[in-house]
Image (tube, rainbow, N blue to C red; front, side, top):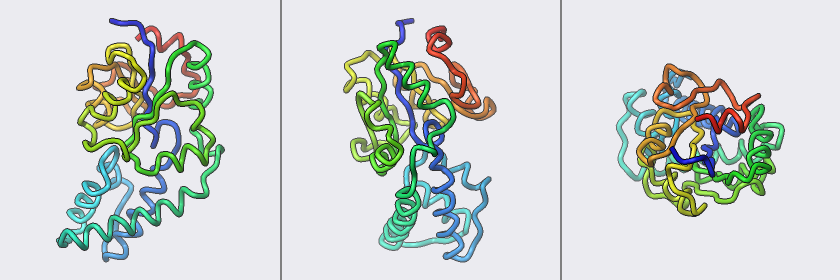
Length: 216
């Protein structure tokens, strides 16, 4: 195995907790359409694109709509979400995330973002995380959703790093699969029940060290 020279991070659920805002916005949309949307339902949307998420939501509610209406609803949900995340600040960075990224930088390991979010820059700027990244690949630069490896392959290319020297940090099953398909090692943030395919699973980045990473 190549030594590790780069780390690629998903955003939602790994560095910041924006998942709660997605959930609030989707629940609000479901309620407006006349059905409920639970936290358990929301698990199915992790790491899934906006339109695919909407289709899952409509399937849960047993609602069938034409494409134009669906586009309008996706825009409405996103407008609510943007309104919620516009008030984020650095207090919403998840425990241990900033400390770990700073430690990587000190050790000369490159850092990239690999997120499906089209609002990634707004979140990074509001939380003060932007300057820590050597490359930022978000939903405005990709055409394929995870588990397609595109987001991570582009990240490695922008960093000038071989895939086998990269480690991906992800909280979604689709993201771990994307990392594997990109030829990269992965660290799952969350539960080993859903992220068992990762090389290592952690409950969070809190207390995780670069030395432990280099043992992967």
